Length: 242
Ligand code: PGA
Image (tube, rainbow, N blue to C red; front, side):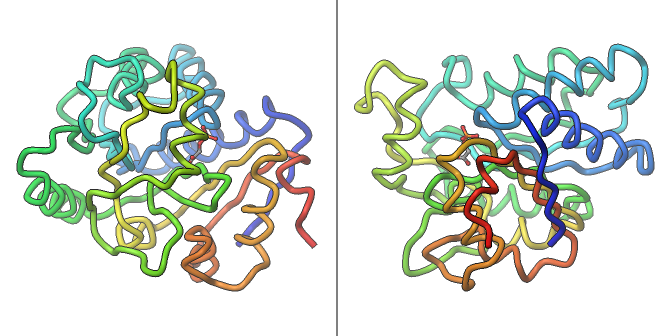
């Protein structure tokens, strides 16, 4: 794992955008795995700026998003479909047919999950996967527990995650209780991974990811087994690394 500790969120966003833009410059047909949440917002803003300045071209890029709440309509302002289109896709020159998002539709969800993995494999696998991390160590919505799943699947969100994400809803009751997420298989098969974290609420999860034992209690700890992971964190998120 390569660890980059930066001074502030702006620097984190610029470094992360730099990794992604370099990937697309080297491979214009890159397959990108994208994440939502507060942490990558600054990175997306930076990418939009670089695209407007003509410094990166997304016309041949394909994307696969990591996860989506189950049961929220795509037009719901808290759906990840809405987030991605507003923060990024509507603002860059990506072709809509090259965008892949997990379905929020619970009908035929198992079949959807199988097909999502097949689509990723048929595209040649993910070249660069962007990850955030939950305070509980989740990546995507692969929650801590006794087991981790390999494939894309429907997951029950933990109480920690529902509470953490309730800041985006008017109450915790409104947070969907389930989500569709890529499994650890698609993530670990990505050729390169960048994981971003900012703030002290992520410090313990980051310390356990970087220098703890590999355990299903901290799903991100499995990244220690990957050959090409860059972890970009601010000083607060790095505070407990020993
Ligand atoms: P955050 O979420 O970026 O909003 O903190 C990250 C995550 O839960 O994976």
